[in-house]
Image (cartoon, rainbow, N blue to C red; front, side):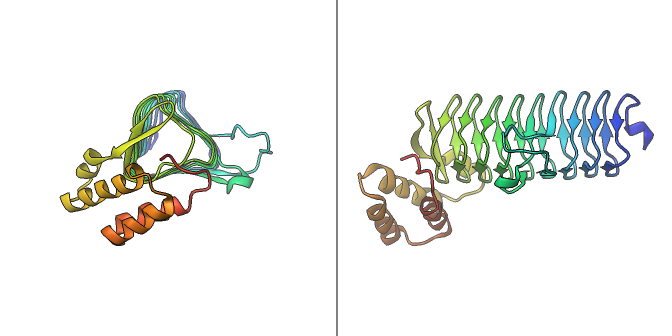
Length: 259
């Protein structure tokens, strides 16, 4: 075990490290941190207490995982960060713990890839298989669905939701919810269509992609009210899993959604 832990690393006796996990020079693992098996913690990484990493998580230099939330109401409560297996956090990524008022936890799903300087604030929920390009910044209480890709320098404001399989272009600013399966970009974010490339890469068949394209045209391009568009979508496309996911997301929006 000792050959996996660099002699300059500081690892609290109250931390738990799984078999095969490596910790590089000058990294700090705090009391209460739980690291799964075969994780790779590079040099100059800080993993605070109340952080749980799955197996085979890789963290690159100068990242701080589980830092205190930047929230004026936080009073030192033992809130948490959980990161799923096989996730990769590149240089200088920061992920903050939750707050009591926000549910107390920040979560990242399995197989996430967060590029350099990305920030995930308190009480965020990020799904599996996401990709954040450099300097993506999530404010507090943001929800990101599975297999979402977000371009570099994009900001997402508090309490926004981004639906699964979306693609957001770089340098965008997201101020409202974005329903699933969409692609778009812009400082004043504009929905531009269905994320065809992303859906095809994830194994969606031609029929499903075609159905979602029709859904997009009805909902976004025919100048219908939400109620009218919903009725027409259900009448013409039926209630498939994808249609249901889209409409349930829209119905659940509290901030309003990009349209």
